[in-house]
Image (cartoon, rainbow, N blue to C red; front, side):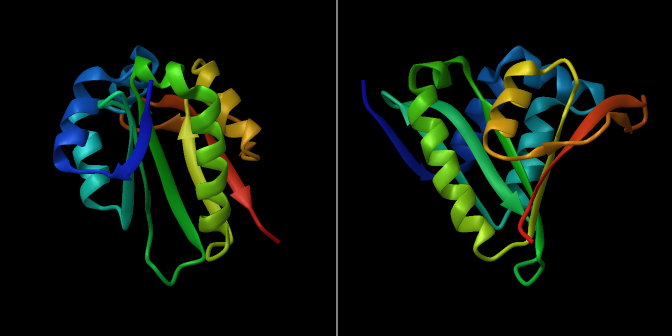
Length: 151
């Protein structure tokens, strides 16, 4: 088994939109989007985005959005079941990438539904703080903010 991290492309974005895990699909539906539309919008509005490939298959696509001179940024991540094959290596990679981002940013944030336990565990192990859930979007779906701050 081999894995590599590469800059993401539109092909990666389209692939993850089709292959992402069901919990992530549910989060996207909860705010009234379709996976292919939201992932594409995030990709297009991101300063940087990457893709994790496992044996040539898309396991994750993620990125960071926010003005370059801003102290805050929005981070996003979508995974396919293939991520389970490299979960420890990917966690180390995420920690390294977050360290690089925090060198130039004071605050990173994302969001997650209360029921998406794998995602909550991943982000909190990386040091993100989970806020109380609040209603988001036209349907009022409940989401926690995830916040990582440097003081």
